Length: 295
Image (tube, rainbow, N blue to C red):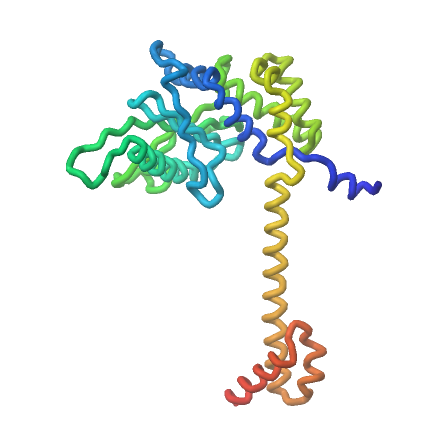
């Protein structure tokens, strides 16, 4: 078997591997409560039964499968948007759209009408971004007005708190460390099954998400693996786009060449066709008719 065929058949890790684990990890109400308690250690009353996942899919064209929305009773709405290791303030726009859609669905679930005179009841939002890259000089809070409007007083505002790696042992920090271990192994072994298995082994040895990884190791491996990962799909998409663009440029160049040659009147259309392979004889005749009209 050739190396090319072997490489094609090799199972690759999903580009969204860390995000998939993020959602799977907090589908478990026990872990979800740990996450909430990390953000609100002062709250001793909230239980697993008072937490509801309200994650929204397909809000944007690229889908929001990597974001976790949590309703805490009827009073507080937590939105946790996992930003991976790529820093972008554009996530504030995602938060804005996500929040609007979350409230829309909330009003429908609670049978509240925005067209009646009675003031609706709505939960207070808390907006977080879990950043798995290096903190550097990045701010701990970002806002729509500061990032997009130079701090101007605008009619709508979105503020989010950034959660970075810390020295704590809470479940959020363990997830961030899990992501960093994954990145380290990916640099060594690429997007392969070995990367996934080494990540799980190292994290279990270091007591990082150990209980989760031990109980759901098979599922985690399955989640993180795919024959056709998102990255490969994007590469194919852009390759197709490049091919389309190349064809359009070649067609434009051949058309311009044909127009010049027809104006010179030195060659027949049959001979011109040899120099402009992307144009059919019918197209050459149309170009000839256009040129003759101008002349």
